[in-house]
Amino acid sequence: MIQTEDLTKRFGDILAVDRLTLSVEAGEVFGFLGPNGAGKTTTIRLLTALIAPTSGNAKVAGCKVGQEDGKIRRRVGILTESPGLYDRLSAERNLDFFARLYEVDDVDGQIERYLRMLGLWDRRHEEAGIFSRGMRQKLAIARALLHEPQVLFLDEPTSGLDPEAARLVRDFIGGLKREGRTIFICTHNLDEADRLCDRIAIINTRLLALDTPSALRRQLYERTVVFHLRQAEPRFVHRLQTLSFVRSVREMDNKLVVAIDDPEKHNPTIIRTLVEAGADIQFVGELRRTLEDVYLRLVGMEDGETN
Image 1 (cartoon, rainbow, N blue to C red):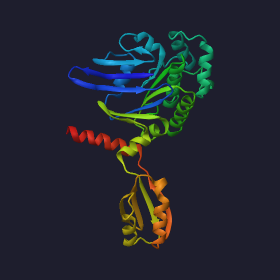
Image 2 (image 1 turned 135 degrees about the vertical axis):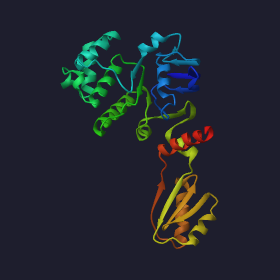
Image 3 (image 1 turned 45 degrees about the vertical axis):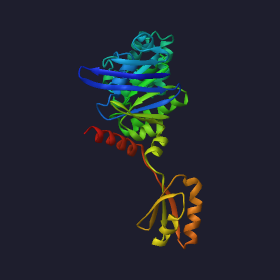
Image 4 (image 1 turned 60 degrees about the vertical axis):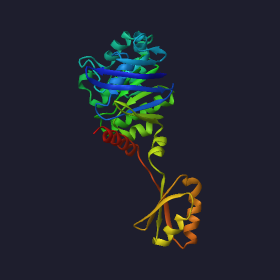
């Protein structure tokens, strides 16, 4: 649904996007992460044919960027970080205006559908200017979906929203995911990306990593299991160090922190070994790395290379 090859954008001497190559499949929710100034919004503007690339190629919904820009704009929906709405028009009239620009067949039906889905139908006659930020964000999402785009681009969809409004927007994105929509999300909310996205790209002008959230964690961190004991003793550490599949063992506050490749396979052997050595095991848990850990490590590595 989206393919880029060496996609590059310069603004004078500033390199905003550096030879970006990636592919997003139909029906995929794709996360696009990076620090401020990393090129995320510029990439969205390139892929939605709002600006032209300096070099490289891209196709969106089967259309070539720079050659079929009009078709691309009709086939995508965009939620910008600061969506512009006509404050003096009602929610309904805002959507009516954009629906007619997109030549939507059933204008009234589409407006009602999305206002109801986003909980705004009872407020449809009120001016957008009096809406809260969360309501404006929901109205902007409805606007982006009116023409049933093949690809939906969301730039910071929950930025600045209160927890209730942010949860509603996330739930709505989850519903679109279940419908099989192709969704491209730029966000600083790493927990949100972890929960919503099938795959994630991390960029800092250039692409740093691209994979599923779980695969990114495995690539950068060993899996680590924590065995909580009634009383830890050095002999327990020595016994585990004799096991070939154990990478490392360290003792910490009556816990044994064990790095192993395949906990599901090897945990039973470790438990038997500890019990045979006289250990009283209280419970076992895995030390979970978050997407934030992965992100900060990758961006930190990049900063370390460039500083």
